[in-house]
Length: 258
Image (cartoon, rainbow, N blue to C red; front, side):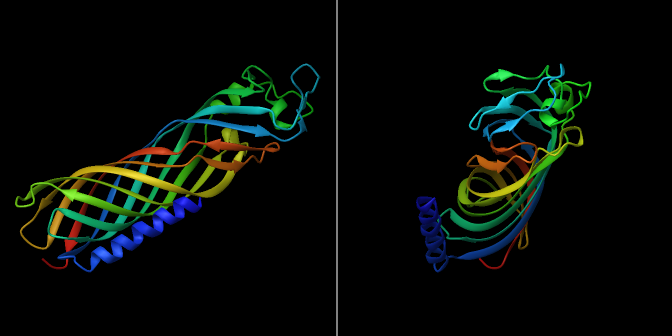
């Protein structure tokens, strides 16, 4: 974590120093579609006793028992705003604020202690003394919940075909992202927590310069954070959730000089 903070501080310093030689400043914004990639969630439990397994029995689960499942997400929305500077040599940099949100579609493949519990009565994980008459797989199939990402990135870009109106570009950035996750399959709260993590993104896009101070652009970004570790509200334990996404957006920039 200290290394990540140091890298971020150095990058911020380079942007500030570089801004002194900027030939043009701009502000921009975009709206887009986010494809939140599936997550293979994994974690370990605290010590607890399950609810009814469906046959009247229960199971004592030892602390440190591995568990997990896979989560699929629906497509969501993304927004971003950036203040940046161009340097006249094809390079530019910017500070960008991003936000994205995607709903949970479904959960599958629930395991505990290395084995599947999809066919077990859902009372086992709901701490119910009486059978619920539905399996774990049936309960988690009804996804519900969402994941949101709110972050700030320091970006660097290179614009090709600088003399033309149409300018493809590539870029990338590092930053800090607050990730908030809610997993509530069939209305049962399993995860409702958030954590801030180091993030990075890789970008490719194209800008079209208009005749005035405006320009429009289309962009693809692959954005990711470290796995987030959140507390389980259903039974003792923590869960690591993968957080990667593909973002497709369109936007506009306004140039202040140049």
